[in-house]
Length: 151
Image (cartoon, rainbow, N blue to C red):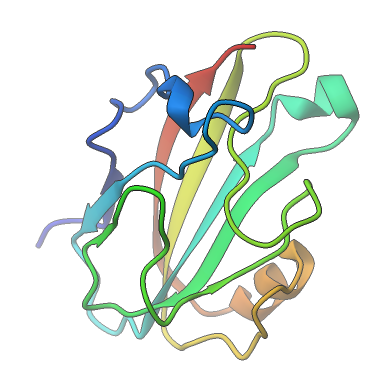
C-alpha cells in the first residue's frame, strides 16, 4: 500500500515556489496532487503555513486552510480548492489562499495534507484554531510538501 503523499507539478519538494503563487505576484494557489489515501479516510484537510515567520512577525503565519475535501479527490487545480470543500480565514484576514509574502528573506512554506476519519463540523471562514481543534483525534495520516519563496 502506498503511503499518503502530497506533491505539486509547479515545484519540487523543497524547491522555489513560482512567483505567480506569491501574495503580491498573482496570488494563485499552486496545483497540488495527492494519493495513497488511507483506508478509513472520510475527508481531507490542508494547512499551509510559514514557520519562518516567527522570526519576522513573531508567529507561524497561516496562508491557507481547506477542509472537507472528499477522499475521492486526487488534486487541487491551479488557483482553486476542490468543489464542496471549505476554506478558512488566513493571517492576511480573508478566507481562501494567501500566497507567500516573506518580509525579510527566503522562507520555507509547509503544506500539510491530513487524512481524517470524519468530515469536520466547522463552518467556512473559520480560523485555524477551530479547524485544528476539530481535527484532534481524527488524523489517520498526514503528508508534507515544502517550498521556498524570497521577496
